[in-house]
Length: 286
Image (cartoon, rainbow, N blue to C red):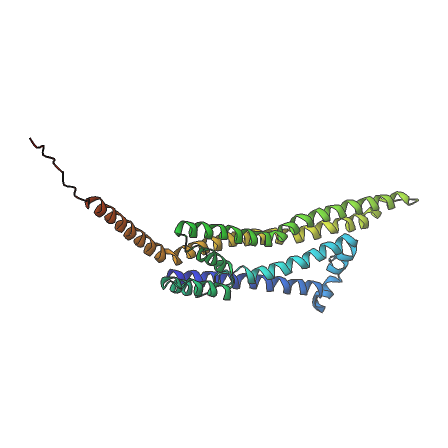
């Protein structure tokens, strides 16, 4: 009952993330291509409107770089939505199949099943299966190392979102400072400069800061969400792998106890059975 509720909750999260992404894409499309009604409203002289294409052009080379970062950010978010999911990291039926093979001492079949379904969980199980002949302590250590390795791999994968979130506002600030310098140089070069003539230059200079912040906010927010998601799924995968080997651990412990009893009883029996030596008496002849 609890697992069904968890699956429904995770499915709802996935659908919610996809819905937010679709809504954001529709908003961007509507912003880039406004409808005639919005265009008529935008032509009102009292309310100047911002055009995304004009903003990108006003941002210059740095504006185009930030726009490229926004495209990369969207591509990464879409890829992570599909790859960092419970069904992708822990394929349905994999744990049950490996558990069945392990309960019948079919270790090679379990390893083959892990190869057929490569995932976060399969790497952990394969690492444990490779140490079955040594003992459960080695199995546990191997699975722990594999879990840490796979978690680090996923964290490195989403690190690009953090890089984009950090780099975009810095590029925006660079573009703003450069634009302000150009605006003041142009203002100084005029014969009769007016203060109002600074407005276009300052407007173009501030565009890159706006673009950088517009990319940084969703990038850093997505990075935090995916990082928490990875921590949650990594812990769940490690717990699932432990459950797969739980029965085998108990069976192995019983076999170890029985072998110790046999050795102990054999040692006791050998200690009791000792060769009897009759004392030899030598009678002296008188």
